[in-house]
Image (cartoon, rainbow, N blue to C red; front, top):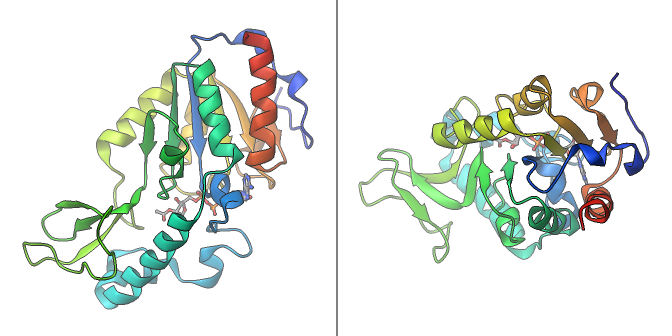
Length: 252
Ligand code: OAD
């Protein structure tokens, strides 16, 4: 029977079902970066409560006002560069030392998983630290580039953030790898996602249908909560270190 825990209760997890060879997926959304000070999308103070996503995250919006779109992403990128990974991200690195066969599948474009030292990261929605040409598709790493000044590719096409916009497909290879990982995983943490945007939101359902044990961490309920084996109403930076302690005590 599905169970929902509104408070942290790690002892309810059947730890003996897992071992160091278990395949584990950390599936994350904007909520894991909230404690780093990065705004989410659908919370009351999230981006989509202030801005029209179709103006800022679609081809139509980019065609209508490319500077508005580029400046919005440049503002976000500058905020992200000032931010630091939080205890949620670093706990995943700790977990990955326990579970060598683990991957991170994220909808986030902020690069904080990588900065926290997480391994094998599948970025479903791209990465804000890259641009791509809207005409020829050339990828431009922004490490040393000023996003506000770079407006045209060598081919003359307009450049844009290498992130997935509404109406666009997810990167096929990355999506395939993510589904493969989910189909063989035994344990999934679904962390800080409202579980509303498909195909990413399909992943926890897919893992569940394949028999994985799913731990959801989110201060609010989501459309997936009732399917989760455990759904914890807590912040990622608070809950993940506690779960890590439980698993670590079992496997050390
Ligand atoms: P959302 O903004 O939709 O959801 C963020 C979730 O994080 C919410 O369910 C919050 O309750 C939860 N949350 C907030 N603070 C948290 C914390 N400290 N710890 C844990 N959870 C917390 O973000 P996503 O689900 O990532 O796509 O959104 C999916 C996609 O929609 C995004 O990748 C973006 C957006 O439009 C594109 O831009 C293509």
